[in-house]
Amino acid sequence: MHRYSYSQISTYASCPILYKFRYEDSLVQVGESEHDLRFGKAWDAAMNAWYAGEGLVYAKSAFIESYPEAEYPAALPYWSPGKSFASGLAGVSEYANKWKEDDSHWEVVSTQARDAHETDDGDSRTVVLDLVVRDRRDGLIYGVDNKTTGKYLDSDFWLQFDPHSQIRQYVDHLQSQHGEVGGFYINAASFRHRTKAYTPRKGPDKGVQLPAGDWRDFKRMCFNPNGDALQAERNNFTSWVRKIEADRESGAWGYNTNYCKRGPIICPYHTICERGYQWPRDRELIEGNYQQRCTRIAANGERCWLAPGHEGEHDPTRPMRADYEVDLSEGEVEEAEA
Image 1 (cartoon, rainbow, N blue to C red):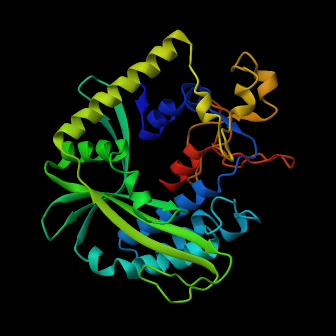
Image 2: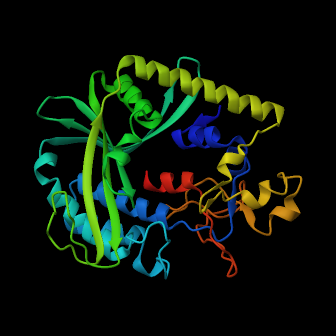
């Protein structure tokens, strides 16, 4: 039985052949930037330590150990100039202070819980919950998803979550486990960078000169989809799963050329698609820029870089190509922020 995550479904919905390359063939670009993904994991590690009650010192240590400063790229990606080591580390303390009062009402139920949620049609959905809490003020269960982003936490940012398949899937799962649920929080941390000092003309900082350099913002919003929305999501999930399995059975995967190039963003599999290459038929032509990567997690918590089905220990050491130019799809940026 295949288990499907929100990321897998959303990837297939964006472009079926993209799904095949990423999840069926397990192909990754050699030299692909993982800065956003690793920064997000480091932030998650800090949040896990914080909500496990280990204290601020251990939360900051978890951030450092997950993504050591020495492993940051010399130049941060242009799409996330604020996700520096120093900013992330400072953000841990700022976050704890920002939500001190609100979090005092939370009783932690679980952190980083990975479950398989069975649907009525027998499909299996993978659900990974960053945090589940009980709010002492109303006695209800809430899910929490930590997101790091390089965007402003404005109305445009929050608009993308209503409606949102991931939130609906998580609320549905929480209800199946706990009964009545109060909702689901998107717990956002924005890491941005100013190249020069700035004095806003409106907003809460109007007239106050804001210094150049890294700066952070923290906001959270609760969403609580109703029963009809949850049923619509179950139907949606089942529909996409049937499409994926039909493509897998037929061996014919469609593609969406609207996803190949979106402004400066280029799909990481563009080199393969534009030539019509297929794996494993064109293996020798593909392996110059891509390699198959094991889906298992190595001892340090990073994904293994060896080929799928290898023997022995899993190895997280990534191969590099000095002449490689990084292209990153919008979908991967969104996954990294998750």
